[in-house]
Amino acid sequence: MMSKNWETKWMWVVSLMVLVLLVGCANAAPEPEPPETLPVATAVPVEADAAVARDRVLDYIRESANECVPPEGVAWQASTAENQAPEGFDVFRFQAEGCEVTVSSPEVSASSGDKFYHVTLDDSAIGFCWTAVVDENGQIISTGSEALNAPGLANPAATYCEEQGFRYEISTAVDGSQCGQCFFSDAPDDACDAWDFFHGRCGPTP
Image 1 (cartoon, one colour):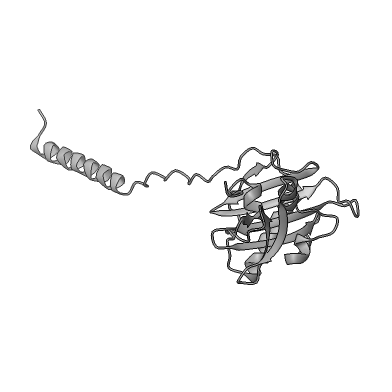
Image 2 (cartoon, rainbow, N blue to C red):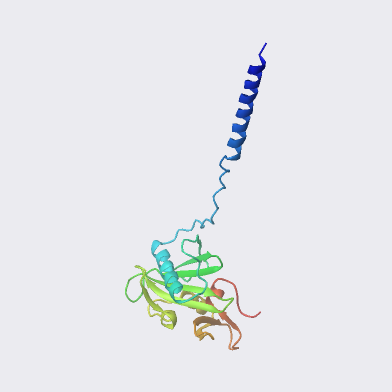
């Protein structure tokens, strides 16, 4: 039979072990939270130069305006406009956080044989549009109306508008920005942003 002294010592040992276990549980590291799931871009092959052209334009706008420009490192959803794109054009559409950038290019520039990209940042909800021509090295060549009318580099939205039998014109917004408009008739209000028409978001009045 166990003596009273041993019983007392044994109870102390058991109590100490329980206390150690309780302290260990209290100090245990919390379960790590699962990593945040970022949106994954669609599996559309995008030319590396087209992505460079997009990023150069976004950098340019971040420095000069507070418009629809997502932060650096955002995951872009990429798609193509194969059905609407005029023959000979590559058109990539990038979307992220409510922002839309269209990067397009003829297969080869008619004037020089070099590759150039027509980059448009468009937010029709607030009437903002901005256009640039960017070379294959990411250098911005022209912006604004000069880019909209760049010789040898047709604007696919303008080409698409005219191919449907309508009239393309450049309009100046209240804030001074210039946007391409597709006019469906002679009525001044029977028109919409050329890129919105290109992407199927508007059209002639029924």
